[in-house]
Length: 201
Image (tube, rainbow, N blue to C red; front, side, top):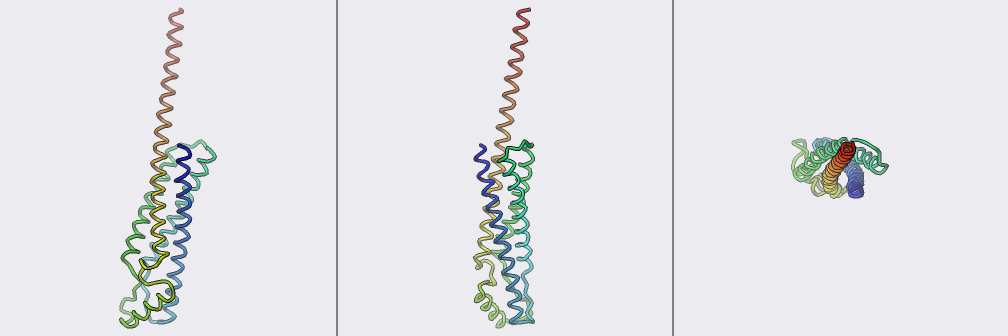
C-alpha cells in the first residue's frame, strides 16, 4: 500500500508544479498582450480581468497543492508517525480547491474572450484581433495552447488528489482493522493465560 500511496502523491506534486508554471506563463502572456494592444490603440479598453482572476486562483491553488502534497510525500517517505486523519483532511481540502480551480478554468477558457466593450468599433476590434493572433496570444482563450494546457493539468492535479485521498482512506481503514485484530488477539491471549492459571489453581 505504501508504494501505491507514493505514486499519486508524486504525480500530484508534478502536476501542481506544471500547473503553477503554465498559469504563470498564461498570466504573463495576457498581461503583455494588454500592453501590446494598448500600444496599438491607446483608447481601447481591454476587458480580461475575469480570466486574470481565474488564472491567479489557479496559480495559488497549484502552489497550495504543491506544498501540501509535497509535505505529505516527505512525511510518507520518511515514515514519520502522524495521525493518518491529518493527511486525509489536507488532501481532501486540496481536492476541493482543485475541483473549484479546474471547473473555473474550464468554464472561463471555453466561454470567455478578451473584449473591448464599446471603446472601439467593429473594424478596430477586427484589427486588434488580427494583431493579437499575429503576436501569438489569441483573444479567444480556447484558441490559446497554454490556456488549454493549464486546464488539462488542473484536472490532472485534481484527479491525483482524489486518488490520494482514496488510498489514504483505505490505508487508514486497513491499519485500523489490523490494530483491532491485534488488540483482539492480545485480549484473547490474556484471557487464555488467565484461564490456565485459574485451572492450575
